[in-house]
Image (cartoon, rainbow, N blue to C red; front, side, top):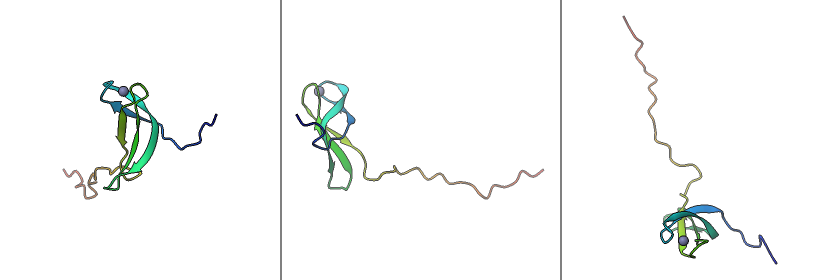
Length: 76
Ligand SMILES: [Zn+2]
């Protein structure tokens, strides 16, 4: 009886067979060719391989909202 022997990642993915969101079991982190991280695992119900893309960076690229520092003061 060993538990927690392997590093697994809890993640949710969409199973195309069950057509439902499932918790990915036996998920292992993988780095794809483009440098993005993904979790590859299995569906707990049917065993179909599931893949969840995490994205390469820890923080997602926020849309650069241009702040308007040169706001013209309301003149009368
Ligand atoms: Zn499934």
